[in-house]
Amino acid sequence: MQRIVYLSVLGFVVLMLTTSAVAQDGESTGGTVMRVFDHFLVDGGAITWFILVPLSLATIALTVEYMISIRRQTFVPQDTFREIAERIDNKQYAEALTYTADEPSVLSAVVNTGLMESANGYAAMERAVEETLEYRSAKIMRKIEYLNVIGNISPMVGLFGTVYGMIGLFSSMRDAGGMPEPARLADDISIALVTTFWGLLVAIPALSVFALFRNRIDELTAECALATDRLLEPFKPGTRPQEPKPTN
Image 1 (tube, one colour):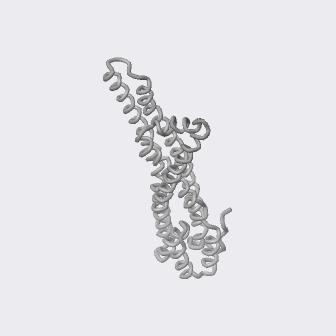
Image 2 (cartoon, rainbow, N blue to C red):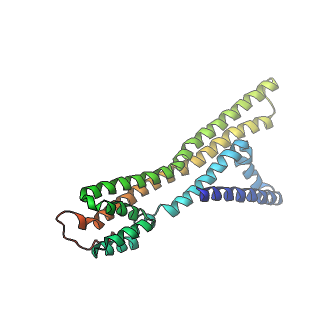
Image 3 (cartoon, rainbow, N blue to C red):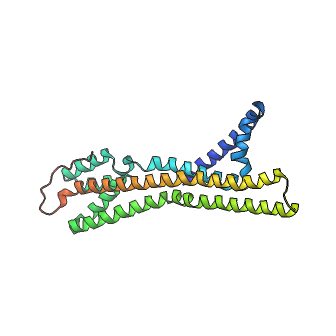
């Protein structure tokens, strides 16, 4: 979480520095870039700057974080599989228990709980493996839920900005006793449209990435379950010990 906050803050600082550079560049090139920047950022007002833009940066930071943490190397590393398989094949169960207790992957955590229940029979080992795998999978799934939350609240924030802009528009018409100045109308309409734009701009990638990572977690969890079953196969009643084969 600290890394996510750091990346979000860093992104916001970079955005502010870019804003200053764009402003200077816009002045020197006739203002074309600056006009585009105004239309899609500045005209959105405080709702865009202090809510929707930070949410977009948080989405990017979360995506980077999950790309690092949710991958096969953290779930079912092949080196770890081979190390555990070698110890179990050589009946070095104490060494396998120690190794899996210290190794940080999900596979090691699941196998460790299974080995801890080996004295109670294979059925107890299966229950321990299932419970641990379900717990670790649910824990990671809750972690990516932040993207789902961002994806669902961003359009609502954009809708809030739309309503706010329309209220300002009708207030301007009332105060003017009819049709106010076009510039005042443009300001209120800009808030309404730009906040809606940013709400969708944040929500679509956030929900898409959430779905991708959710499917990725399901896939890696299934691989971890299969690998664990192969590693603990020598403990099955009536099964002759053999060297477990790593997954592809």
